[in-house]
Amino acid sequence: MPSQAPVAATPMAFARAMVEAYARYQKDPARALEMAQITPGELQQSNARITAWQMERLSETAMRELDDEALGWFSRRLPWGSYGMLARASISAPTLYVALSRWCRHHGLIAPDITLTLSTAGDTASITVTENGRYEDGVAEVFAQVKEEPATRAGDTEQKLRPPRPSPANRLPAPFREFCMVSVLRNVLGVACWLIDSRITLLQADFPFEPPPHADAYAVLFPGPTRFQQARAAIFFDANYLKLPLRRDEKSLQHMLQHALPLTVHQYRRDRLLVQQVRQLLSAQPQDTHSAEALAALLNVSPRTLHRQLREEGATLQALKDEVRHSKASELLLRSQRPIKQVAEAAGFQNEKSFIRAFKTWSGQTPAEFRRSATPGT
Image (cartoon, rainbow, N blue to C red; front, side, top):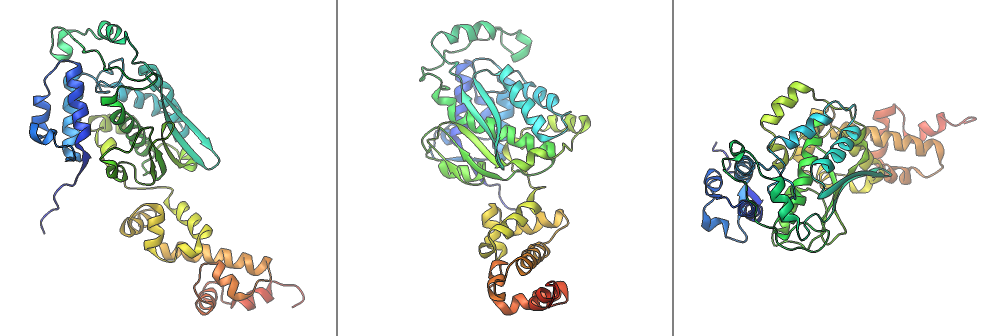
């Protein structure tokens, strides 16, 4: 059976942002574009898309040639290995909460143009990007002074930098703003998933700009609801992920850093909170989770992915349904006098007969017999 062709889902606008970074450094992007198999004509197509492989090749080549992992976003160059340094500072943390707290704090030390903030509100955690307005008039001169590097670093006798375009106060420059926010959030999300060896299901993603022409690509970049024209860029997810222990060590870190870019391009597959999330949805929304298709839609995954990931966690959807329905039905039978039909509906059954049959399979008694046996004096 022939293999499927790679899906081109990444907006060409991000490739153009990288070419703009070359212009800031007064360098030629020809080799990087050639490595990524992007022609000058394709680059100028406003609605064009590139594959994950092309994005990886272009990003890595640009980062190495410009010696800037931030690709011109910030007023300081982030030399090759900067994000690896953040990963090293986080790897010894006992939980994801501590690791992400370190990542956010240390990111501010190397790139003060933005502030990353990890916070929780009830059951929801968020990572927010705040723009600090480092691209003000006069920054170009300081940037150029700081960025003079030895010739052996980036292949130039002198590191020159074109002044950034004027931008409103507290905003990153327009050519880089969207790409920066998307990349920073995808980067921290990818590293977080890798640290706990689990996909982190997003509840929502916010961005402080108008919907771009390629807004549909955000469904791939940030699966789940996406809102534009918000106060800040942010991702939101279940706070329980923050309690998970890290599952990586120094050896695995060394291996990951050799192939780190896929973490920011590809979605992580395994979700260690999936069983818990399925239980919560089955309990809270029994009438909306009758089928695998309906449940998968609520989790922003395909039914096939849902079944596969549950299997990887040693669970099945039917077993979880039985567990949740049995628990809910038993509680209602013991703590209320609601008719059997209402208990069946509340437990997620579409009719009373199927509920009675299932309950007898679970407990060896009909619902009425179970209620009478647990009631003193009957």
